[in-house]
Length: 323
Image (cartoon, rainbow, N blue to C red):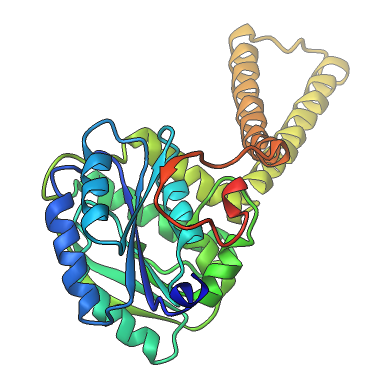
């Protein structure tokens, strides 16, 4: 078994959630792309609690081809945890992360691998065009990543997703990172190493609809910000200091009006508006602090990030799926 593990040159990790309509062409195109590189590859599909026939299709193909591996979660644990589960069970010297909806073309994998052979530890696919996505999604994603780049000390490449190739060295470091709220593109950028990019046009979905709802996008953005920046906490501190100064000035003015000008400060409406406004700011700051505390709480509990119900993969190469 050891010799078999050592000679695996390429692993492809594919998270799957209700993608039965595209699995057949996806598997075919992945095979063709990998065979252009090496016969020693593995395809690791992570079924993230699909409620269609995705897992059954994967099992059927795994019987016909022992290079096709599957991991079945007990429920939906989220895209980032699905990708991480595949990374942990991978054995390749190079590991490619690609979504299972065929928006990211498998035909680009040989180009990523060619860059890797030049000595780069991370090769990410950079989108020059995103077909089939709404103006809101493109705009919000662009604003988020540019804002994240401004408020963090790490250089997360713009216009990229999780579609990339990472070396075994990067994989080992990634598995050793203990946070429960995964933001893999940020974690990989934080690790550093030599990086390069390959440009491509992202295609429309071949079937079905996007699994990233607005709520999931907001949660993903929050994970990214709280994992790599203390800027929201600094905003809360600044707002607290700013409104404390304003309140102190108002107190001084009230005392001045009462004892020097001998006028009574009136205005029930203005007082109520001010109180409600300051109360809203306080709740906002408490919410920001609560987001950070909730992540500390999750990490302290040390619950597994995912539960594997069934798999044909070898035992994980580390205890990474317990974190």
